Length: 428
Ligand SMILES: Cc1cc2nc3c(=O)[nH]c(=O)nc-3n(C[C@H](O)[C@H](O)[C@H](O)COP(=O)(O)OP(=O)(O)OC[C@H]3O[C@@H](n4cnc5c(N)ncnc54)[C@H](O)[C@@H]3O)c2cc1C
Image 1 (cartoon, helix red, strand yellow):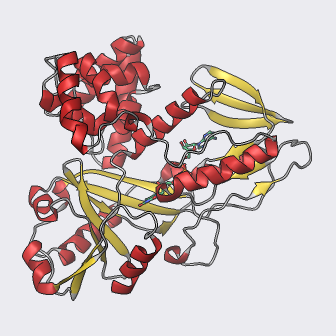
Image 2 (image 1 turned 90 degrees about the vertical axis):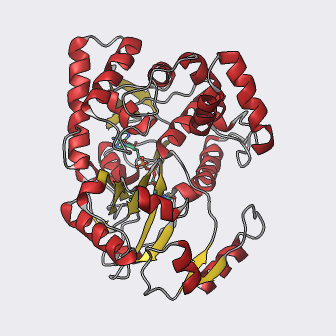
Image 3 (image 1 turned 45 degrees about the vertical axis):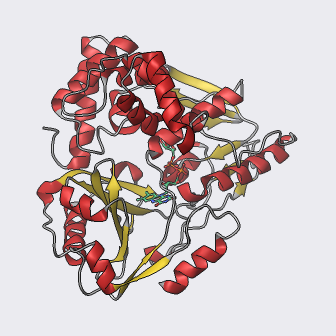
């Protein structure tokens, strides 16, 4: 472990922004986290960045991209369903659209093979996905002992697991099981039992049971097809194989295999360069230091206090509330605070306001209620999406989006169904 962490420091030395690793003795580790198993030999500490809201990061990237590139478009809830020659058939909320392609980037992650089929491409399978599940626990004592840290540990079966604080809950993951259909991926009772068992082994000083679970979810990693290789040994590196024009398909297709959040900027730049080259355009803008979404105009630690005071004076919002919105939305917090005003109405039992929902519904490409509950906010993942909260979000968003009573009812039913499937129980 010590050698691994030393290599991590070595490879990151040129762009270092965080402290180097440190090793702690068993006694010191047990002092810091008393519930930890005494079977440990020592503990290594290193620092890393975290993405606090991956779904919001996707949205902000899409919004920045379309704003900076007039003429581009992002179509939410729209599927590629077929192809005739160079013409792609897209099916979305506003019906069917046709687009003539000069080049296609297949960025459908675990759905890459099904998009290849829609493109009528007779390719061998490109994806050999593995399912990863996670659970979130309501466990204040565990959060207290974690104190902002992630524990990255080996289960009894040798798999690497992790547990860390996430929006007031403890997130535990993940499994690594060969799986094909991303639409059917769910966290199974066996996976839940595996996580609970691993936590009991790691932290025998704490109590764990299934009643603490507020949310469970699963996803398929879009790893390269690697038949016969054990899941843990499949390469996590990314690649962008190109299918050159063939038969009645006059355009090339670049598939994005195996991407990760950790490397998305480098991977995107790599693919953008190859697309630009094929289309005969020079690159006009590097993005390595470009700030994303609400990161633009976000104050640094020294300017934070002034920024909050100024936004609070301009919008009438309480400074404490502005600080919370700043952590959640970056500099976009100012617009959200203006929408909320001096007296935010909070959704029952949560710190999310109706003003936030109105803002999101108006400017964040919402098509369905679950976009708000599961992706734009943390209501779903933190287990705060009770039946009452879902109904109220549907009313507030519905008013902004012009949903009538029938549409609101459909949206509530669909969102409840998704949460029930993920959580293995209907929202309370
Ligand atoms: C369990 C798990 C744990 C992970 N942990 C980490 C981690 O710790 N660190 C890290 O960096 N990364 C991690 N990842 C990887 C990361 O979350 C993404 O899976 C990876 O970046 C792939 O992203 P993507 O954009 O290629 O695909 P996705 O994010 O899956 O996007 C594919 C998109 O294609 C759309 N689509 C599907 N079919 C069609 C169609 N016919 N027409 C149009 N669109 C379609 C889907 O709706 C979806 O929006 C993890 C992934 C999983 C599953």
